[in-house]
Amino acid sequence: MATSNHSVGEPVVEKPWHAAYPAPKTTAAVITRETLLSWMLEGKLAGKDFVLVDLRRTDFEGGTIRGSINLPTQSLYSTIPSLYALLSTATIRTVIWYCGSSRGRGNRAAGWFADYIKEQNNTEMESRTLEEGINGWATGGDEYVRMMDEYDAPVWK
Image 1 (tube, rainbow, N blue to C red):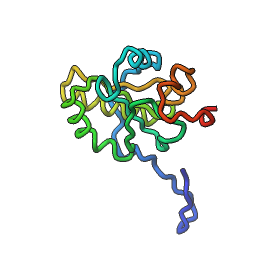
Image 2 (cartoon, rainbow, N blue to C red):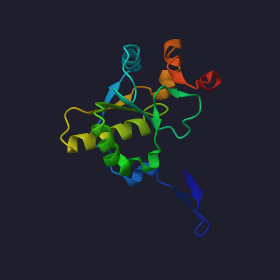
Image 3 (cartoon, rainbow, N blue to C red):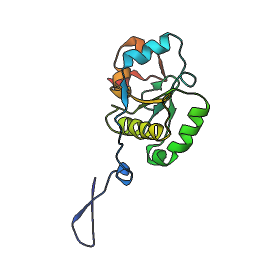
Image 4 (cartoon, one colour):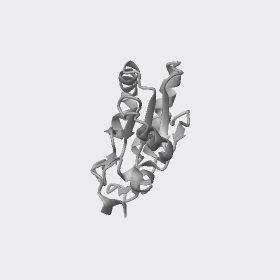
């Protein structure tokens, strides 16, 4: 995003929010929507067997995958130790991150969390990115839409 610097008359380029933090060292594993859906249909529960983290800026638009929690991305990096402590105490083994496409916030957060898991020498917990994010999920067909809360069809058309 560029803004005008009135004192000099030259555009000032603002850095993205994530530029304040180091790039992830780890590329987190990917989970496909097909695999996640099969988990849900087998009876695995979000919040118990795995955690879904929605990182969209406008998480309310169009609905969300059932059982997701929403976290603000600007404060995510500094809260990773606390989030890890909560999830590891609850014996959550898989944390699945997504945003609209899981090509930006989703995979970056999954990488940061995977880095932290490695630093803790935890070999039981994993951080994954939902392939294609909520866009892929919501446009994947009726079986996916049925697993969404507050699904709003016009948003996905």
